[in-house]
Length: 453
Image (cartoon, rainbow, N blue to C red; front, side, top):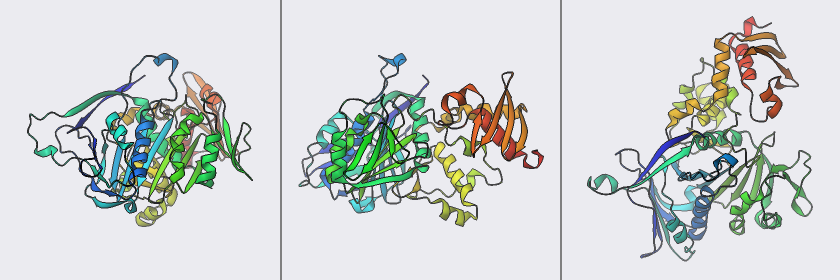
């Protein structure tokens, strides 16, 4: 399993001080010797709920729902959550250690009284004492929140800095960028009030159901599960991943469920008015999001006439990036802007907010140069193009012969879906994105439309 070295540097551990009202101080990480970003200083209007949402992020990031057989006994340090400040929003996001579950908490401007004094994305130190202190917060407390540390740049060189050196799995970073593409492709399936949703969650099996896919269906008595889906519900596995929602539902307004067309992921969104929690589950806990390839088409078919840099230049820590508004601004077709935003998501430069149906700008605080090596199918498809391995048979519907490793594979468009005779497609049936042969065939047609049969 590939890993990459990452170091968190904090001026001090995060803490919660009760000496003069509750005051959360979230320490942010700073690379090298640059000052720690100071994002926010203010007071939260719903102290206990805010503390519970922060605890949910910590709990999920510290969870593992699946352990591969070849990694038993391997200790891997966990990634600290990521915080983004921009457009008046504060967002905290992270992934479970097994890469199967993503969580994000969004705080709207109405959730606090204070100043967002910085823009950017970084890690925050979230330690066990911090979570224990958060459990003590009550609504009677006045809960202040500081994100960042303004004193770091003023301290002497001899002052100790809290460092965490971790070996993060490369698949963690791959999952963090892949989940944005999944969310952008999701549609709203159900929205239910919090109390019926809580009854539903409490009815789910307490033990892991990772080997039994379940479907959430809506009926006269509310939500229910079945093992036989008819395409109208939401598919998920392992109900233990949903336990983090149970204690929060009594304070929520609604629970909204989203799913992509292929039912390869689901999203469970709690709306608290000025605060939200989004939980995204992969189709299987053993699969995670790291091997997904839903954005590969956009990457492979990038149009040099509409360079990605043009859309990237519009990013300025916006809380909402709508493709139609950007398209009007740039005078581009909306699908081209959609593709560009997908590519920026794969590059770690935007996330997706389901409740607002919009992307938001953030830059993952990791070595993003690693992302170039994270799509082997893309690299293989480009190699096939360079080698002239693609022979186009027809353009509409697309049919091509692609020669790879002395074997010719047949790529065909059938009822609007691309199919291939390779073993990889036979195994996944397109559920994990296109194979390298499909990518190469589509790119060959895109590059030479006038020369196609």
